[in-house]
Length: 159
Image 1: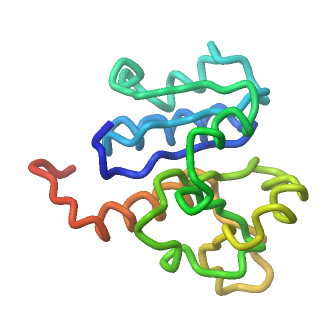
Image 2: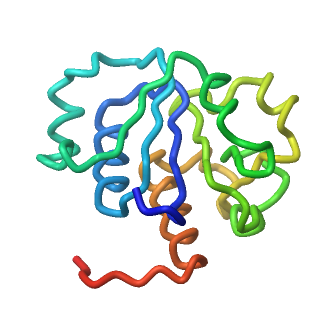
C-alpha cells in the first residue's frame, strides 16, 4: 500500500467476480483492500480468483470479522461510506478520508450505518431515475481513481 492511497472496504461482499475485480483494482493501484465477513461466497471460489487474475500475491488484503474491528483503527473523519442514499457527492468527502466503505451488491449498507454515520455517507450521481445502481466494481473504480487524481498521483505506467 502507498501511504496516501485510499483504503477500500467491502462490507460482506456477495458476488465473487466483483470482489475479484476490486481486488485486481486495489492491487494495480496499491490500495489496501479490507473485506468484512461473512462473504456470500467461499474465499477459494474459482470465480473470485479468475476475476483477480494472477494478481492476488500483489494485493494488500485484510479480512475482518466485523466492521467495528476495522473502524476502531480510524478516526470518524477518516472514514467515508458509499451509499446511494448519501446526502453528499463522493467528490465532497474531503482529503482526510483514508478508508472508503462500500456495501453489499444487493442491499447496500445496513440501516444502522445510515443512522449512525449519515454525515459520513456519500454517493455517486445517477442520472436515470429507472436505474437502481452501478455495478459495485465500477463504483469502487470511479471513486478510487477520483481519490488518486485528487491526491496528485502520477503513474509511471499506464494500461
